[in-house]
Image 1: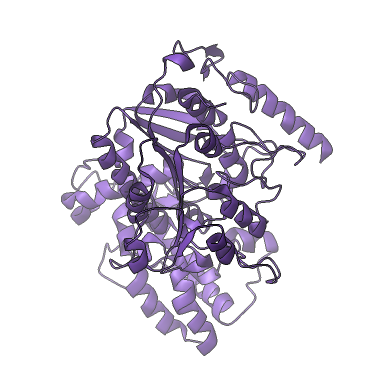
Image 2: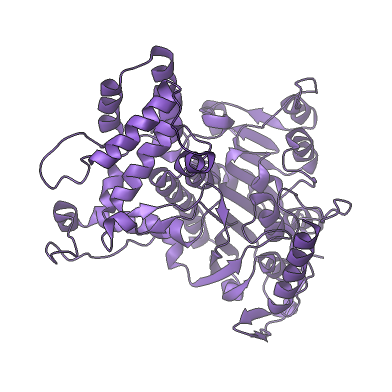
Length: 518
């Protein structure tokens, strides 16, 4: 292990040099890697205009496959002829595909790419990659804004603009506000799992706006600590837990916790959200209202459940939460129309999750993405609202299969050519998963085979989404993260600085340069 870590650190240092900067060091020349050469951009920090308003959107787990599958899905749904025929390359019949429908940020004036490795893996986690984005430093997976020895803390871009420029700061997340990615903009902890200590730093940050999911472990790991929400109120925060109250909020400091918390005290998946529930876009609108002032603001918004959906290999939920992030981005785009020469909007990811692919061995060169429209509920809601009941009541398989048809479109029989009809092989997979989930039966699989089949998820739920994914022509290779680079889309002031292919630490460096913070 020691030799592995040493080699990994050596690779980290080498890659950082190739990217034009030492890990964590500010790169005043804004160097970017182009092939095997490093080209210094001519613009200096002094020549860059400082944006007054900065929006940073992070799709957790969102790389090229996530937003491209969402774009392809919209394109397939919009193509009525394609929906009716679902053409196959086998016979070259059917309508001609019109193509994807670009998400709003895919039309930004600049698109770059960022490499995501951290100090000990090419498939990093959210804590370390968000640290790279927020501080310009690499660290170990699981660490937030501290070095590899956990003895040195790094100041974040949000702390810098708050203290040095007087900009107001907002942090939004569809998952928990003391989860890894949002925490990386205000906390400094050796372990991302120290939720209570992270929450204490949230309270102490002085940032004007927090909104989204609830705090994890608000009374400590053992439930015997002072309640974080009470501490926040004592520190001057208005803690709001209903939409009615949130609607009346006009100024900070405020912590708005979503009224309709779902799995893990996070916001509901977009697929499960009803019209009466606030969306990620609503929290961005409220954030602008709270933060807007003469000195400007920095607003970070995380679409955290893209990652959670991809961990569970739920393609439909991933697509809908990616679309929810795009809706939130639209709020910033609309704001920028009135502040065109003062606003910078960035959209990126921290890493890729799940090894999502557009293409599956079982469908060869064909895709049938409109089949994903048959899914009406996320895997998490299915677990809580249905599988839990199946277990308690030992619900028979025939009844479960009827629910699966209603909620996911998969069926035992149908008209010829209906691609949602289950094959004998798929029906066998479902029955095995049903027996394991509902009756607790052993599968007879080796441990490795069982993990590949189900990961750590409910066997019935993950088998359903796997089958629907594969029928649609998409698949996953992992229940964890991968080493894919992420896109960096930029629009507005200094957007051209984000061109190229570079290390994710450069996102911080470029922001620090243009905002002239030290």
